[in-house]
Image (cartoon, rainbow, N blue to C red; front, side, top):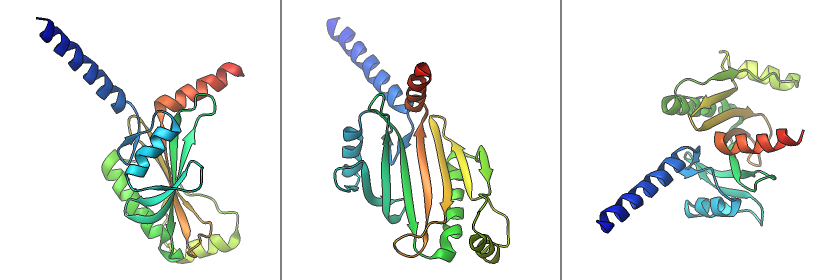
Length: 188
């Protein structure tokens, strides 16, 4: 009888931990939760390498090499609440085509974006170049609701080391972001 009770308690605890992990946004299968060091160690096991002693890593993401990953940690709680990925696109004329591929993959995984917009460019050269390259009007930033958080993707027309630009994706966990915000709001 004691064994059955012990087994039932163990199963309930296991189910609780599994449900807890499912309530967090994930990045490369790792829940965006816990302290930065533990989260970074899990990303290292996925092949990422740290840059110095910071919360920045380099590795392969979504088939793109040399991506820079920044782990976003709450100053108030010390917990990870988000991850920002900069995907370098070395062909300046191909950045938008790559954006569209990733947009299609995110749409397939999460459904239609909850928000899309065309980023206004202040630089006339960029506006002209954009119009010459892309005759169709297509959003340059979008937000997907994942149920546990959101993924924002945007084109960054900033020169990369390889001569192109970046696609920036930001993964935010709702649970940890809400805790972080509440602590800030409570102090205001």
